[in-house]
Image (cartoon, rainbow, N blue to C red; front, side, top):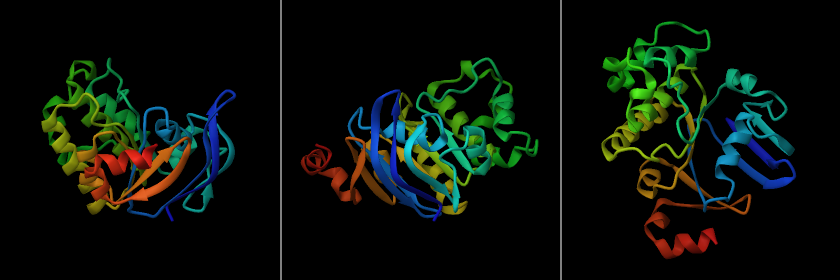
Length: 228
């Protein structure tokens, strides 16, 4: 098991967001998380990576309990995170953003450019001058430079042009299927989610209450009933 979350509670100050949440994710799995705004999807990813503190419960990464560890140790243990809004370093070049993602590991990121050929001619461009889609590709590449074993993706298609959305589908399939990296994806784009996720969990009122197959994503009434 790559990631085991049990009876997880977390939130902001005294406001509880996640309540007794349980999730098991095997190595190489690709799990989609779907829910209404405010259901706790982003909070779940932030709690796993350590940006939101755990109130109670456990997060276990490959038999190592990480719920009390700081973010940098979780990242070093193999957790990668691509936040909503990308959050690249806009004043740094593409090359410098990738180097920061390596966290002191090998300075050779040429193999990464084979997976992200769009970035090759942009290495000396300042990150803030890239389009939204290019910044999203950069954020994903920067995450992979750290050699994570599990990647947390938060709304990667938000504000991204369709051509790059299609490109991201191909990249994420390669990352998951060829490299065996486990992925947890929070996404409102149902077509994107259905193209990638091997299984889909519904997050409602801070709990993961149901698991659905991809056919439900094409039935708006059935999906809305599950998310009520």
